[in-house]
Image (cartoon, rainbow, N blue to C red; front, side, top):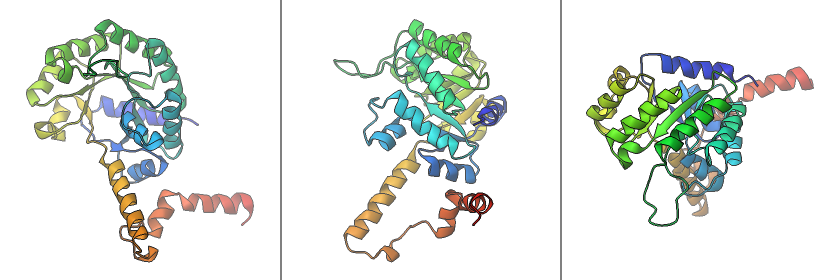
Length: 286
């Protein structure tokens, strides 16, 4: 498949002057729904991947192969530009190179590589960062492994919440100097935090977990934030819906009386029923 168009679309967003919220997606149907609703990009998080593929907490026990396979299923279902959370790149800098190769092949438009110390080490287990030198090495490795120049590499740091704003700025500047296309920051709380970062670096910004005074997309756009995550509630809403439907059936509610069931026209739309009907007529003679 040709993935270039969706990657170019993502780059247009980074080069623009407005901030967008991505649609949090986790499988082909959710991605099609986000695309049909007009979301400019989709977001496939590592935590949601763990929930979807393994049914496990976000403890970074999902493998790269499992993650890439699910990303591919999402991408082949439509044209949504997909941003993925590739955690720490599933290992050291050489593992990051493999991660870039797999996710580029899977049709991902943009991926983040973070500098959090993962997986959880033996001991107290408090969140920690890898060294700045190792972080820079991972960013350079990702850029070296990239074959499609339109594929976006995003340097991600949790330094603001782990080590403070000064360390976040230091790492952002170092990753920018390494050549990444954008920077992803988590843990920012105030407009002052964002302003300090925005003035220290020049490339586009992505924010995770925005809340409070950082929820105004118009303001974020003026600070060069091009993507701001809203969380991953769609997955949890789906969990609740399945739970409630199964519980109602278990309790004796007739299937026809279930509430919140997708109507047939919605099911036909998200399964692309009309396309398959056309192909059946054209190629199977019926």
